[in-house]
Amino acid sequence: MSKLFTPLQLRSVQFRNRITVSPMCQYSSTDGFASDWHLVHLGSRAVGGAGLIISEAAAVSPEARISPFDLGIWKDDHIDKLKQITSFVSAQGTVPGIQLAHAGRKASTNVPWEGRGKVPVEQGGWTVVAPSAIAFADNYPMPVALDAKGIQQVIADFTAAAARAVQAGFKVIEIHSAHGYLLHQFLSPLSNKRTDNYGGAFENRIRLLLEVIAGVQTVWPADLPVLVRISATDWAEGGWHLEESVQLARILKQKGVDLIDVSSGGLVNHQQIAAGPGYQLPFASRIKKETGILTGAVGMITTTMQAETILVNDDADMIIMARELLRQPYFPLKAAHELNEKIKWPVQYERAKW
Image 1 (cartoon, rainbow, N blue to C red):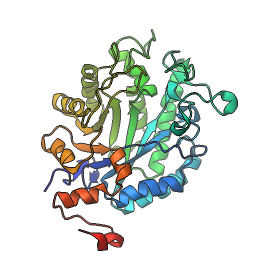
Image 2 (cartoon, rainbow, N blue to C red):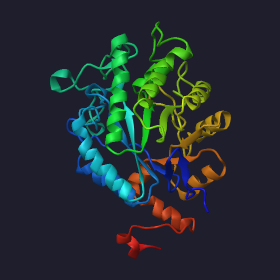
Image 3 (cartoon, rainbow, N blue to C red):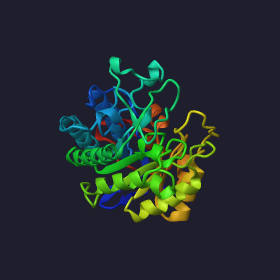
Image 4 (cartoon, one colour):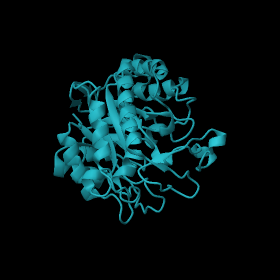
């Protein structure tokens, strides 16, 4: 059997293959509610045979949204539509997951197709928060530094969102600490200039992430997996770097995190990224081999053999794909054919089976 179609077990959850749909913001929500767009978007990829689907970043509070049109899970009213989606995804044999997120200083901005930049309060925007009062860019909002009460509220918001995720039927939870959003902002010295217990030394900068994980674990079932997405490096001098990611990974493993989704960048707009096929794979590989924690590989993975080779070489344990699965929602069915794997197709599509 190919590695790509070898099932993976995390706690009580088994994934039928190693292909994961990465969280991809759709900016198609009103007041945080999922819609039929999300049902069809995620449902299509479940029909397409993915082992795990992680829904786009779900804001844990209204001010945690990147844009006014982000998906949310900050109130109980959001649960019903999400439950419809998880029910459909599960019925196709795919595991439904959700990414919990807080945008921090990158919040209250326009959707990408309208051009990035702040949404003023008078036009529906809001006051944004961060570890320190440092804006992401000149056209982004100036954040307010979180005080002790605000930090505790962030932890409470993540915890409450995780409890709702259980009610909505999700079987995997991913905590978003990458791409320059709030938890990543606390990790990096470029965005965190605090002098209290949440700034300065490494152990202080990781404190909020660890406290969020601990809060989530109080409500998340012990037999279901917890993932964390990190940016392994800021791609900028003086920022968060791979050695710190390795150190963090060792701690996350001890804290009961099951897999690290290893991405990079997004914290500062002067980052210098050497992008190319599989350009983030060395980060996932090193974290896996030096710490023993399972990792997910991301970043310009577009072909069956590329994905299979990553797993065969033991550089990662899961292939987390984004843009290729926008282009090809049924990529797993095609990949199985290319690897001569006999997998179950939806009966409604059997007539098209190779």
